[in-house]
Image 1 (cartoon, rainbow, N blue to C red):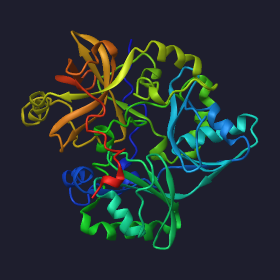
Image 2: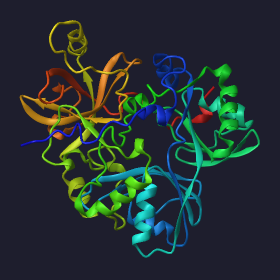
Image 3: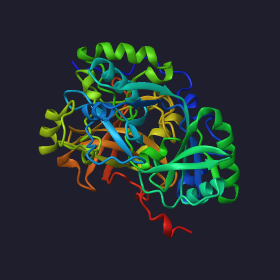
Image 4: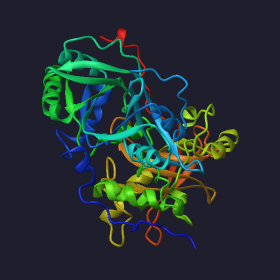
Length: 427
Protein backbone atom coordinates (compact mmCIF):
# COMPACT_ATOMS: atom_id res chain seq x y z
CA UNK A 1 0.00 0.00 0.00
CA UNK A 2 1.41 3.36 -1.00
CA UNK A 3 1.75 6.17 1.49
CA UNK A 4 1.43 9.92 1.05
CA UNK A 5 3.48 11.77 3.67
CA UNK A 6 1.75 15.14 3.65
CA UNK A 7 1.53 15.21 7.44
CA UNK A 8 4.98 13.84 8.17
CA UNK A 9 5.70 17.11 9.98
CA UNK A 10 3.73 20.27 10.43
CA UNK A 11 4.54 23.26 8.29
CA UNK A 12 6.80 25.75 10.07
CA UNK A 13 5.12 29.04 10.87
CA UNK A 14 6.12 31.87 8.55
CA UNK A 15 8.44 29.64 6.49
CA UNK A 16 9.12 32.04 3.64
CA UNK A 17 8.86 35.18 5.75
CA UNK A 18 11.56 33.89 8.10
CA UNK A 19 13.87 33.34 5.16
CA UNK A 20 13.12 36.18 2.77
CA UNK A 21 11.50 38.97 4.79
CA UNK A 22 8.09 40.51 4.30
CA UNK A 23 5.77 39.00 1.66
CA UNK A 24 5.69 41.97 -0.72
CA UNK A 25 7.42 45.34 -0.97
CA UNK A 26 5.59 46.72 -4.02
CA UNK A 27 3.54 43.79 -5.32
CA UNK A 28 4.58 40.28 -6.22
CA UNK A 29 3.66 40.93 -9.86
CA UNK A 30 5.81 44.04 -10.02
CA UNK A 31 8.67 42.32 -8.21
CA UNK A 32 8.51 39.29 -10.50
CA UNK A 33 9.17 41.52 -13.52
CA UNK A 34 12.24 43.11 -11.95
CA UNK A 35 14.78 40.51 -13.02
CA UNK A 36 13.59 40.76 -16.64
CA UNK A 37 13.23 44.53 -16.92
CA UNK A 38 15.32 46.25 -14.23
CA UNK A 39 16.86 44.38 -11.27
CA UNK A 40 16.19 43.33 -7.71
CA UNK A 41 18.00 42.95 -4.41
CA UNK A 42 17.14 39.81 -2.47
CA UNK A 43 18.41 38.85 0.96
CA UNK A 44 19.78 35.30 1.24
CA UNK A 45 21.65 36.00 4.48
CA UNK A 46 19.82 33.08 6.10
CA UNK A 47 22.13 30.70 4.23
CA UNK A 48 24.71 28.94 6.38
CA UNK A 49 28.39 29.41 5.68
CA UNK A 50 31.23 27.11 6.60
CA UNK A 51 34.88 28.12 6.29
CA UNK A 52 36.93 25.01 5.58
CA UNK A 53 40.71 25.30 5.59
CA UNK A 54 43.87 23.27 5.93
CA UNK A 55 46.15 21.02 3.84
CA UNK A 56 43.40 18.40 3.37
CA UNK A 57 40.49 20.80 2.84
CA UNK A 58 40.37 20.20 -0.91
CA UNK A 59 40.65 16.43 -0.47
CA UNK A 60 37.70 16.47 1.93
CA UNK A 61 35.58 18.46 -0.51
CA UNK A 62 36.57 16.18 -3.37
CA UNK A 63 35.66 13.06 -1.39
CA UNK A 64 32.13 14.28 -0.69
CA UNK A 65 31.34 16.05 -3.99
CA UNK A 66 30.50 14.79 -7.47
CA UNK A 67 32.39 17.76 -8.94
CA UNK A 68 35.90 17.77 -10.31
CA UNK A 69 38.48 19.96 -8.61
CA UNK A 70 41.23 19.34 -11.15
CA UNK A 71 40.89 23.03 -12.02
CA UNK A 72 39.71 25.26 -9.21
CA UNK A 73 41.40 28.64 -9.02
CA UNK A 74 41.46 31.09 -6.15
CA UNK A 75 38.60 33.47 -6.87
CA UNK A 76 36.50 30.76 -8.54
CA UNK A 77 33.20 29.25 -7.35
CA UNK A 78 31.44 25.98 -8.13
CA UNK A 79 27.96 24.57 -7.65
CA UNK A 80 28.91 21.51 -5.60
CA UNK A 81 26.67 18.48 -5.06
CA UNK A 82 26.97 15.92 -2.27
CA UNK A 83 25.36 12.48 -2.65
CA UNK A 84 24.81 9.36 -0.57
CA UNK A 85 26.08 5.93 -1.56
CA UNK A 86 23.03 5.46 -3.82
CA UNK A 87 23.79 8.61 -5.79
CA UNK A 88 20.90 10.61 -4.31
CA UNK A 89 21.46 14.23 -3.34
CA UNK A 90 22.15 14.92 0.33
CA UNK A 91 22.89 18.63 -0.04
CA UNK A 92 24.23 21.10 -2.58
CA UNK A 93 25.52 24.64 -2.49
CA UNK A 94 28.08 27.15 -3.70
CA UNK A 95 31.75 26.60 -2.90
CA UNK A 96 34.21 29.49 -3.25
CA UNK A 97 37.99 29.16 -3.14
CA UNK A 98 39.32 32.14 -1.19
CA UNK A 99 42.92 30.97 -0.74
CA UNK A 100 45.14 28.02 -1.61
CA UNK A 101 43.95 26.01 1.40
CA UNK A 102 40.79 27.93 2.34
CA UNK A 103 37.22 27.58 1.06
CA UNK A 104 33.77 28.98 1.85
CA UNK A 105 30.82 26.62 1.47
CA UNK A 106 27.38 28.24 1.37
CA UNK A 107 24.26 26.23 2.19
CA UNK A 108 23.36 23.10 4.12
CA UNK A 109 26.30 21.26 2.56
CA UNK A 110 28.53 22.89 5.14
CA UNK A 111 27.00 20.67 7.82
CA UNK A 112 27.69 17.54 5.75
CA UNK A 113 31.26 18.70 5.15
CA UNK A 114 31.78 19.34 8.86
CA UNK A 115 30.31 15.95 9.77
CA UNK A 116 32.46 14.17 7.16
CA UNK A 117 35.55 15.99 8.40
CA UNK A 118 34.97 14.85 11.97
CA UNK A 119 34.31 11.25 10.88
CA UNK A 120 37.33 11.04 8.58
CA UNK A 121 41.06 11.57 8.83
CA UNK A 122 41.67 14.99 7.35
CA UNK A 123 44.22 17.63 8.29
CA UNK A 124 41.69 20.45 8.09
CA UNK A 125 39.33 22.49 10.22
CA UNK A 126 35.75 23.63 9.71
CA UNK A 127 34.43 26.85 11.24
CA UNK A 128 31.02 28.54 11.02
CA UNK A 129 30.91 32.06 9.69
CA UNK A 130 28.23 34.76 9.63
CA UNK A 131 27.98 36.68 6.39
CA UNK A 132 25.32 38.72 4.68
CA UNK A 133 24.46 37.41 1.23
CA UNK A 134 22.56 39.69 -1.17
CA UNK A 135 21.50 38.79 -4.69
CA UNK A 136 21.45 41.67 -7.16
CA UNK A 137 20.15 40.39 -10.47
CA UNK A 138 18.61 41.66 -13.69
CA UNK A 139 19.55 43.73 -16.76
CA UNK A 140 20.54 46.74 -14.62
CA UNK A 141 22.44 44.81 -11.95
CA UNK A 142 25.90 45.73 -13.24
CA UNK A 143 25.11 49.43 -13.38
CA UNK A 144 23.76 49.37 -9.82
CA UNK A 145 26.79 47.58 -8.37
CA UNK A 146 29.24 49.78 -10.26
CA UNK A 147 27.54 52.89 -8.91
CA UNK A 148 27.56 51.56 -5.35
CA UNK A 149 31.18 50.37 -5.58
CA UNK A 150 32.40 53.26 -7.75
CA UNK A 151 34.39 50.87 -9.86
CA UNK A 152 33.99 48.60 -12.87
CA UNK A 153 33.01 44.97 -12.21
CA UNK A 154 32.81 43.82 -15.84
CA UNK A 155 36.09 41.95 -15.54
CA UNK A 156 34.50 39.36 -13.21
CA UNK A 157 33.87 36.16 -15.16
CA UNK A 158 30.84 33.96 -14.55
CA UNK A 159 31.22 31.92 -11.33
CA UNK A 160 34.21 33.97 -10.27
CA UNK A 161 34.52 36.64 -7.59
CA UNK A 162 36.77 39.35 -6.27
CA UNK A 163 36.74 41.99 -3.57
CA UNK A 164 35.06 45.36 -4.10
CA UNK A 165 34.33 48.13 -1.60
CA UNK A 166 30.87 49.46 -0.79
CA UNK A 167 30.46 52.17 1.86
CA UNK A 168 34.08 51.55 2.83
CA UNK A 169 33.49 47.86 3.53
CA UNK A 170 35.19 44.98 1.71
CA UNK A 171 32.62 42.84 -0.10
CA UNK A 172 32.99 39.72 -2.20
CA UNK A 173 31.25 40.16 -5.54
CA UNK A 174 30.44 36.71 -6.96
CA UNK A 175 29.06 36.73 -10.47
CA UNK A 176 26.30 34.17 -10.48
CA UNK A 177 22.65 34.83 -11.33
CA UNK A 178 20.01 32.61 -9.69
CA UNK A 179 17.32 34.37 -11.73
CA UNK A 180 18.85 33.25 -15.01
CA UNK A 181 19.97 36.83 -15.64
CA UNK A 182 23.20 38.75 -15.16
CA UNK A 183 23.66 38.93 -11.43
CA UNK A 184 25.99 39.06 -8.49
CA UNK A 185 25.96 37.75 -4.95
CA UNK A 186 27.43 40.27 -2.53
CA UNK A 187 28.91 38.71 0.59
CA UNK A 188 30.57 40.17 3.64
CA UNK A 189 30.57 40.31 7.47
CA UNK A 190 27.04 40.48 8.86
CA UNK A 191 27.88 43.63 10.85
CA UNK A 192 28.08 45.55 7.57
CA UNK A 193 24.78 44.17 6.25
CA UNK A 194 22.62 47.27 6.71
CA UNK A 195 25.22 49.65 5.28
CA UNK A 196 25.71 47.62 2.11
CA UNK A 197 22.00 46.95 1.63
CA UNK A 198 21.16 50.66 1.92
CA UNK A 199 23.97 51.58 -0.49
CA UNK A 200 22.66 49.14 -3.11
CA UNK A 201 19.11 50.44 -2.78
CA UNK A 202 20.32 54.02 -3.10
CA UNK A 203 22.44 53.20 -6.14
CA UNK A 204 19.54 51.35 -7.71
CA UNK A 205 16.95 54.10 -7.38
CA UNK A 206 17.50 55.49 -10.89
CA UNK A 207 17.72 51.95 -12.29
CA UNK A 208 14.33 50.72 -11.09
CA UNK A 209 15.62 48.36 -8.42
CA UNK A 210 13.06 46.37 -6.45
CA UNK A 211 13.32 44.61 -3.12
CA UNK A 212 12.41 40.96 -3.55
CA UNK A 213 9.60 39.85 -1.24
CA UNK A 214 8.92 36.39 0.12
CA UNK A 215 5.96 35.63 -2.12
CA UNK A 216 7.93 35.84 -5.34
CA UNK A 217 11.46 35.04 -4.14
CA UNK A 218 11.57 31.54 -5.62
CA UNK A 219 9.67 32.17 -8.85
CA UNK A 220 13.05 32.89 -10.41
CA UNK A 221 14.23 29.40 -9.38
CA UNK A 222 11.25 27.97 -11.26
CA UNK A 223 11.57 30.02 -14.44
CA UNK A 224 15.35 29.54 -14.57
CA UNK A 225 15.28 25.87 -13.43
CA UNK A 226 17.22 25.82 -10.21
CA UNK A 227 15.84 22.76 -8.37
CA UNK A 228 15.79 23.41 -4.65
CA UNK A 229 15.87 21.28 -1.51
CA UNK A 230 12.39 20.72 -0.03
CA UNK A 231 10.73 22.26 -3.09
CA UNK A 232 11.97 19.70 -5.63
CA UNK A 233 13.58 16.91 -3.61
CA UNK A 234 14.05 15.69 -0.08
CA UNK A 235 17.63 15.31 1.09
CA UNK A 236 18.77 11.69 1.22
CA UNK A 237 19.28 11.73 4.99
CA UNK A 238 16.36 9.65 6.28
CA UNK A 239 17.81 6.16 5.78
CA UNK A 240 19.07 4.09 8.69
CA UNK A 241 22.74 4.59 7.85
CA UNK A 242 22.22 8.39 8.04
CA UNK A 243 20.54 8.39 11.47
CA UNK A 244 23.52 9.89 13.29
CA UNK A 245 23.91 12.69 10.78
CA UNK A 246 20.16 13.38 10.75
CA UNK A 247 20.15 13.75 14.55
CA UNK A 248 23.03 16.25 14.38
CA UNK A 249 21.44 18.10 11.49
CA UNK A 250 18.09 18.43 13.26
CA UNK A 251 19.78 19.67 16.42
CA UNK A 252 21.79 22.29 14.54
CA UNK A 253 19.03 23.70 12.36
CA UNK A 254 16.37 26.24 13.33
CA UNK A 255 12.85 24.89 13.05
CA UNK A 256 12.06 26.49 9.69
CA UNK A 257 15.06 24.79 8.09
CA UNK A 258 14.87 21.33 9.67
CA UNK A 259 11.25 20.56 8.82
CA UNK A 260 10.56 18.52 5.68
CA UNK A 261 6.97 18.58 4.51
CA UNK A 262 5.41 16.56 1.71
CA UNK A 263 2.13 17.24 -0.09
CA UNK A 264 0.55 16.63 -3.49
CA UNK A 265 -0.90 13.72 -5.42
CA UNK A 266 2.32 11.71 -5.75
CA UNK A 267 2.51 8.62 -3.55
CA UNK A 268 5.46 6.37 -2.75
CA UNK A 269 6.21 3.20 -0.84
CA UNK A 270 9.13 4.78 1.02
CA UNK A 271 10.48 8.26 1.69
CA UNK A 272 13.28 7.55 -0.76
CA UNK A 273 10.68 8.01 -3.52
CA UNK A 274 11.09 11.76 -2.90
CA UNK A 275 14.91 11.61 -3.19
CA UNK A 276 16.50 12.68 -6.47
CA UNK A 277 19.85 12.13 -8.14
CA UNK A 278 21.85 14.91 -9.83
CA UNK A 279 20.90 13.32 -13.16
CA UNK A 280 17.17 13.58 -12.38
CA UNK A 281 17.61 17.22 -11.34
CA UNK A 282 19.41 18.18 -14.55
CA UNK A 283 22.87 18.42 -13.05
CA UNK A 284 24.62 15.67 -15.02
CA UNK A 285 27.24 18.10 -16.33
CA UNK A 286 28.48 18.64 -12.77
CA UNK A 287 29.32 14.97 -12.32
CA UNK A 288 32.94 14.10 -13.10
CA UNK A 289 34.47 10.67 -12.66
CA UNK A 290 38.08 11.84 -12.37
CA UNK A 291 38.10 11.16 -8.62
CA UNK A 292 36.55 8.88 -6.03
CA UNK A 293 33.52 10.22 -4.18
CA UNK A 294 30.56 8.94 -2.24
CA UNK A 295 27.94 7.66 -4.69
CA UNK A 296 30.30 7.35 -7.66
CA UNK A 297 29.43 3.73 -8.52
CA UNK A 298 25.70 4.40 -8.57
CA UNK A 299 26.08 7.55 -10.63
CA UNK A 300 28.39 5.89 -13.17
CA UNK A 301 25.58 3.47 -13.95
CA UNK A 302 22.92 6.18 -14.07
CA UNK A 303 24.93 8.53 -16.28
CA UNK A 304 25.61 5.65 -18.68
CA UNK A 305 21.92 4.73 -18.82
CA UNK A 306 19.70 7.55 -17.52
CA UNK A 307 16.00 6.94 -17.06
CA UNK A 308 14.69 10.39 -16.09
CA UNK A 309 15.60 14.00 -16.71
CA UNK A 310 14.45 17.51 -15.77
CA UNK A 311 11.93 19.49 -17.82
CA UNK A 312 9.43 22.31 -17.42
CA UNK A 313 5.70 21.61 -17.70
CA UNK A 314 3.30 24.27 -18.97
CA UNK A 315 -0.10 23.64 -17.40
CA UNK A 316 -3.25 24.06 -19.51
CA UNK A 317 -4.83 27.41 -18.61
CA UNK A 318 -8.47 26.30 -18.89
CA UNK A 319 -7.87 23.33 -16.60
CA UNK A 320 -6.14 25.56 -14.06
CA UNK A 321 -9.07 28.00 -14.18
CA UNK A 322 -11.40 25.09 -13.35
CA UNK A 323 -9.53 24.63 -10.09
CA UNK A 324 -10.22 28.23 -9.07
CA UNK A 325 -13.80 28.10 -10.40
CA UNK A 326 -14.54 25.21 -8.03
CA UNK A 327 -14.15 27.63 -5.12
CA UNK A 328 -17.33 29.39 -6.24
CA UNK A 329 -19.47 26.27 -6.59
CA UNK A 330 -21.34 24.30 -3.97
CA UNK A 331 -19.76 21.09 -2.76
CA UNK A 332 -16.17 20.27 -2.05
CA UNK A 333 -13.75 22.34 -4.11
CA UNK A 334 -10.44 21.29 -5.55
CA UNK A 335 -7.42 22.03 -3.42
CA UNK A 336 -6.51 25.71 -3.51
CA UNK A 337 -3.68 26.53 -5.91
CA UNK A 338 -1.68 29.30 -4.25
CA UNK A 339 0.04 31.87 -6.47
CA UNK A 340 2.65 32.75 -7.37
CA UNK A 341 4.12 29.88 -5.27
CA UNK A 342 2.93 27.80 -2.33
CA UNK A 343 4.07 29.63 0.80
CA UNK A 344 4.08 26.76 3.30
CA UNK A 345 7.50 25.29 2.62
CA UNK A 346 6.22 21.95 1.32
CA UNK A 347 7.71 19.69 -1.29
CA UNK A 348 4.56 19.73 -3.38
CA UNK A 349 4.93 16.66 -5.61
CA UNK A 350 2.21 15.80 -8.11
CA UNK A 351 1.80 12.75 -10.30
CA UNK A 352 2.41 13.20 -14.01
CA UNK A 353 0.72 10.55 -16.10
CA UNK A 354 0.29 9.51 -19.72
CA UNK A 355 -2.44 7.05 -20.67
CA UNK A 356 -2.92 6.34 -16.99
CA UNK A 357 0.75 5.45 -16.41
CA UNK A 358 3.05 7.37 -14.06
CA UNK A 359 5.77 9.06 -16.15
CA UNK A 360 7.01 11.82 -13.87
CA UNK A 361 6.65 13.98 -10.78
CA UNK A 362 5.88 17.71 -10.99
CA UNK A 363 7.35 20.04 -8.37
CA UNK A 364 7.80 23.79 -7.75
CA UNK A 365 4.46 24.60 -9.39
CA UNK A 366 4.04 28.33 -9.70
CA UNK A 367 2.47 31.11 -11.69
CA UNK A 368 4.75 33.17 -13.91
CA UNK A 369 3.35 36.66 -14.36
CA UNK A 370 6.00 37.23 -17.03
CA UNK A 371 4.80 34.30 -19.16
CA UNK A 372 1.19 34.47 -17.86
CA UNK A 373 1.30 30.72 -17.37
CA UNK A 374 1.18 28.14 -14.62
CA UNK A 375 4.36 26.11 -14.89
CA UNK A 376 6.29 23.57 -12.87
CA UNK A 377 9.50 21.65 -12.94
CA UNK A 378 9.22 17.93 -13.61
CA UNK A 379 11.47 14.94 -13.18
CA UNK A 380 10.19 12.91 -16.12
CA UNK A 381 10.89 9.63 -17.91
CA UNK A 382 13.11 10.09 -20.96
CA UNK A 383 10.44 8.42 -23.08
CA UNK A 384 8.11 11.36 -22.40
CA UNK A 385 10.67 14.18 -22.18
CA UNK A 386 10.44 15.40 -25.77
CA UNK A 387 9.56 19.08 -26.08
CA UNK A 388 5.86 19.41 -26.83
CA UNK A 389 4.90 16.01 -25.44
CA UNK A 390 1.43 16.09 -23.89
CA UNK A 391 1.00 14.70 -20.38
CA UNK A 392 -1.47 15.06 -17.49
CA UNK A 393 -0.76 16.43 -14.00
CA UNK A 394 -2.98 15.11 -11.20
CA UNK A 395 -3.89 17.97 -8.87
CA UNK A 396 -5.22 17.23 -5.38
CA UNK A 397 -4.36 15.07 -2.40
CA UNK A 398 -5.18 11.34 -2.41
CA UNK A 399 -8.69 10.81 -1.05
CA UNK A 400 -9.70 14.38 -1.96
CA UNK A 401 -11.23 15.76 -5.17
CA UNK A 402 -8.62 15.55 -7.90
CA UNK A 403 -8.39 17.41 -11.18
CA UNK A 404 -6.50 16.10 -14.20
CA UNK A 405 -4.70 19.06 -15.73
CA UNK A 406 -3.34 18.83 -19.24
CA UNK A 407 0.27 19.95 -19.63
CA UNK A 408 2.99 20.16 -22.26
CA UNK A 409 6.66 19.40 -21.85
CA UNK A 410 8.88 22.46 -22.34
CA UNK A 411 12.60 23.17 -21.96
CA UNK A 412 14.25 23.67 -18.58
CA UNK A 413 15.16 26.41 -18.02
CA UNK A 414 11.95 27.86 -19.46
CA UNK A 415 13.22 31.42 -19.53
CA UNK A 416 16.25 32.21 -21.68
CA UNK A 417 19.48 31.86 -19.69
CA UNK A 418 21.28 35.22 -19.77
CA UNK A 419 23.73 34.61 -16.93
CA UNK A 420 26.81 34.42 -19.13
CA UNK A 421 26.26 37.55 -21.19
CA UNK A 422 29.39 39.49 -22.07
CA UNK A 423 29.30 42.35 -19.58
CA UNK A 424 31.44 44.50 -21.85
CA UNK A 425 28.53 44.72 -24.31
CA UNK A 426 26.01 46.00 -21.72
CA UNK A 427 24.83 49.63 -21.74
